[in-house]
Image 1 (cartoon, rainbow, N blue to C red):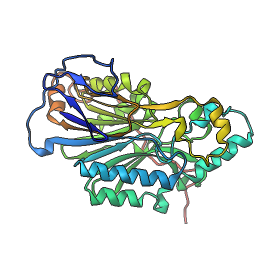
Image 2 (cartoon, rainbow, N blue to C red; image 1 turned 180 degrees about the vertical axis):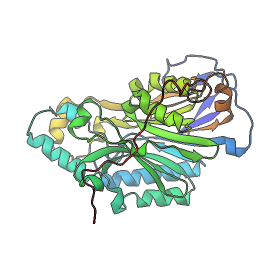
Image 3 (tube, one colour; image 1 turned 180 degrees about the horizontal axis):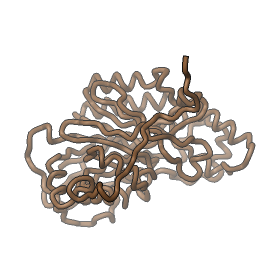
Length: 357
């Protein structure tokens, strides 16, 4: 198996030894994998692209332009599913932890937050139309992490949303992060269960969650119960986040797990960022180092975390591996007891009003 990052080949050798420049070197040093690639028909295989990139931070249009560039790169590489990181469009709120974000009634916090909201995405206004058109043009499905300025919640609060666009260019689900994590709550609103959905993609059934939602066992179980066998986990960018949980979810669910992270270095802050000097005073050189990776349904690495490297990472996966690993454990099938424990999922889209005309 060959993996490309910005044109550089990373090789997965026949006997399972991983040698990947820029990868997490200590993840599985010289480990021999039990993964066996099976020759099957093309419906069983899926070529995945992971866009590990930095945003043009808090600049909506320039980040859209960068996303479009990577869609075209993925199309040239014949990807069938392309995944971008959490809140990539227009970026993660790194400023909060760097500028005393919990200070009440702070002019600094208000002004940066307002800039963030203005550069967030309103889907109803057609702000993803260019991206959807490229998905359709290239017959490519996508998961894209955005900050959503939700019209049905008044249009002033923002939600960390994971958008699934199918190969026809149609938006099939918008999952608003159920629970923002820690200081994210100072700028993001909590979502709802409407986006807890899965989608058929060739022989696969794909679903996804945002960042630390992946640690929520009931949210994972909801997707498992809907038939998920390809799990997408999106992150703002850190091998600290992706290293353990990617393999854990894969082994728990006996599914493929694709973790995609973004990048962010101090030089990625645009010069016109509000209160830039205050942000830079406490900013480390690197805020997000990537860590995108893929684990197979046996919980072993297909691609270990790729660190500090911007580019398109690709791999082809085989659905038969799911069926093999479900032979001895299927968490929502033969190894479940719905007569004893059962989960209820509320997928109603939440709104403060019900309008009756």
